[in-house]
Amino acid sequence: MKAEVFLPDDYRPAEDEPFMNERQTEYFRRKLLAWKSDIVENSSDTVASMKDQTRNIPDVADRASEETDRALELRTRDRERKLVSKIDAALRRIEEDEFGYCSITGDPISLKRLDARPIATMSLEAQERHERREKVHRDD
Image (cartoon, rainbow, N blue to C red; front, top):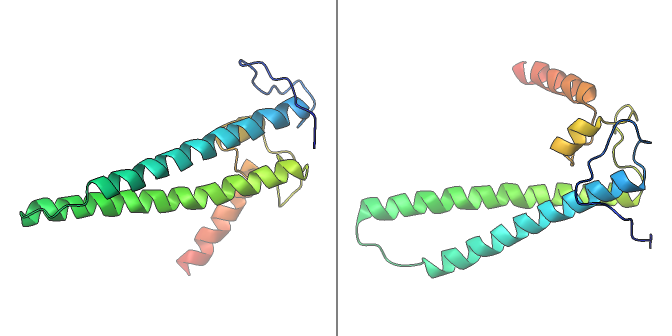
């Protein structure tokens, strides 16, 4: 197990420090864990809320509206469930010292991109190429 890394509350990764040093890695690890925690907490709140709100609504329009709201909420939670697995994969990459590097080219992913989307597995350029290829094949 790695030693605890001191990280000031106002720390932000900078381009002028070594890429994916201990502080940067710890910054992204904490960011991912906080994000996962928020998702899990929201999910628990949704389950509790849905249990509390189960009732028989006599008005058909009101019932349809509530069912639509529930379906939307469940779709959102399903997306978040998939996001949690991507967060877990990013945390594994941190443990394996592979975090922050493009899975296609092996080049470093920009700190700005990682800060905005810490689950990113490709550099912006590789992601754009991937999306262009995907679009071409989808249009066939």
